[in-house]
Image (cartoon, rainbow, N blue to C red):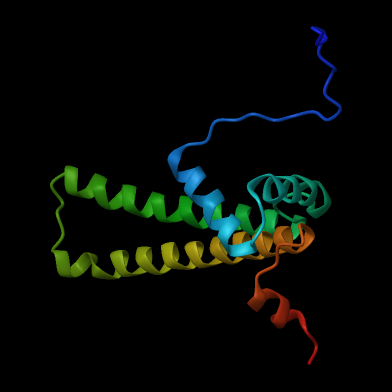
Length: 142
């Protein structure tokens, strides 16, 4: 006769619901690294603790500076909009330097933030032993 008392599980389990986008990302990681889903998740959990905070002190200072630049651009745009609302409309040709400057600052902010997040993602993957081939080769001193 089978016992009706279940043996307690030895290992804790995690059950989670993913959005379709996150499920697709997880599937990409499974294919990319050739590992089962559970192993990808386990390695990322371990690595997230080993890799430390997402932003280093230097990156935090950079984000503060980028935020300052974005606020400065916002003030300039606000001044342009106030002038337009007061009826002091300027010709579109006269505003070109403002828009060009805005585009340059936004592009620079985007580039710097992308560099920070890509570097952290690479660090996290290395810690999880999920480094991509080009990340492995770029670290070789050869």
